[in-house]
Image (cartoon, rainbow, N blue to C red; front, side, top):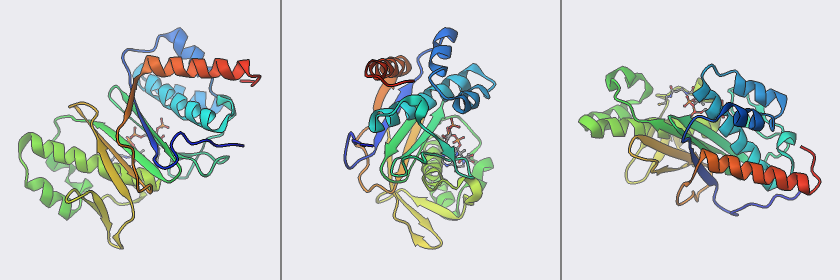
Amino acid sequence: MVISWMDNVKPFLIAVQIENEIPDETFDNYLALLPEDHRNSVMKYKTKDDRDRALLGALLIRFHVSKLCSIPLQAIVIHKNKYGKPYLPMFPDIHFNLSHSGNWVVFIIGEKAVGVDAEQIKEIDISAAASFFSSTELQLLSSYEGHRKLECFYDLWTLKESYIKALGEGLSIPLDSFWIELEPFITVHTRKGNQNWHFKQYALGDAYKLSVCSAHSSLPEKVTRMTSNELLDQVSLHVSAQIASGHKL
Ligand SMILES: CC(C)(COP(=O)(O)OP(=O)(O)OC[C@H]1O[C@@H](n2cnc3c(N)ncnc32)[C@H](O)[C@@H]1OP(=O)(O)O)[C@@H](O)C(=O)NCCC(=O)NCCS
């Protein structure tokens, strides 16, 4: 099986903006492109918004792996590790991760471990969230006031979450067992010393923070943005082309 990377070095980062609710008929047509287990995991969500986000996430994974590996969307097997991180047992050299928040679904795919986290910035009681941070991070937070403090909170939060997601071990990693330093460049520290992970933050609009952590030393310059309708159109064209070239769904 030939894997042709779109970019030989850097992972590829995409942010899909959900413009409006996906109409029921359209939703059903795209859901039918997924194998049964993935359909069920999309449909387990109670709200329409969550189901839309989950469907777009499922399509992002399958569309990109399908293009990369030239196999039909439905034939891609996705397993989850014991902490819930999805991976591709058929293609151990392809790594990906997803995050959804508000009206964004963000996806990253690369040749090494990757983690991504997007969060919508909301006015929250930062003191109540102190248990998420180490003493070094709390010290940094305490040096800010007002909106800058809230921004710093979400910077740290999304960076920590992207690190946990790159490792794939979920909240089995105590949140105060490692800390993020923002200056002079973003690094993670654990009690075992400085770790060889690379971080980058991307703009996603004023109300959001987006952070990536990866074993790739070179991260994308920018996030590729598209709307949910553009993604659905791309998936449609790709599936039609595969059918025309003799692939079964
Ligand atoms: C589940 C978790 C991985 C992320 O949760 P989240 O931020 O609420 O959700 P996101 O939208 O960013 O990510 C969800 C996606 O991550 C992926 N994912 C699930 N478990 C994962 C894991 N252990 N590692 C990496 N990725 C994982 C899945 O693709 C999932 O989407 P799907 O269910 O549609 O397939 C986990 O870290 C968690 O529960 N975090 C709780 C939040 C918290 O306390 N954070 C403190 C940070 S300071």
